[in-house]
Length: 320
Image (cartoon, rainbow, N blue to C red):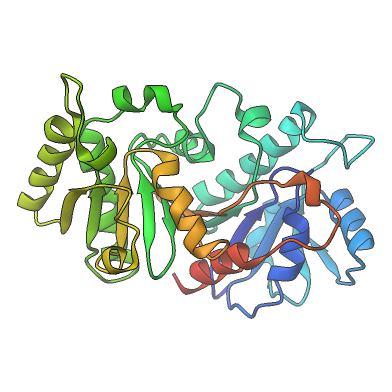
């Protein structure tokens, strides 16, 4: 294989992922795509959506011997034993999803590739209370504690300091070290992958970066972290108020906006770019990306879902 393959874990079986997969693989890429999913589910979806494409079953033990291209669907089959394959999202699919990720992580650990895409999963049913998200789930498999969730668009990206933490716990979760670690991961990623030194805007926690409380997180935590990073020659600016940073004349000055919590930065980014963004996990010894949307089971089988985010994920890994 001249180009390292891109592994694609289909994820939650009761989702729109296979539909957008069929749409996304129409783009031309040099890297072979290897889908990790149930052959039974794949065929059922192909019939439902009237897709006609050959499937090539890949034996993981002999994967180095294959000459792969994208004229067919290269599939590593993972058994899915539910009698009714298109049920509502539930814990019944957890074993199948776990096995799919295990196949992918083992191939990465064997140096077969360093490129992974996973389809959306339900955090509530798959992870429960054990992990905050797939970012943490995959990081644990590689013993990585320092990670970051970068929602990437070529014009503007965002990163939350805390990921899927309930709002009432955010103020207690942020720290100077956490802000510094995330900013360094972003800086290293842009320099290594994109050959540029990013300009990073850091947001405050409180409205207008002000508070009537006795402890001011923006003065005691955020500002000192920014000052430290500046001394380390990282291009950081702020803290800025989140209610104005996404105005066109403000956001155009920066490559990345680093926020204190999930919706503070993801909500405005998705409003601006909709499906034109991808979720990249920083800090891993390989590149892991997921489309920037959920399973959306209500759209299953309707053939109306937008594949743009998955297309962007495949294209990014093909070029990097």
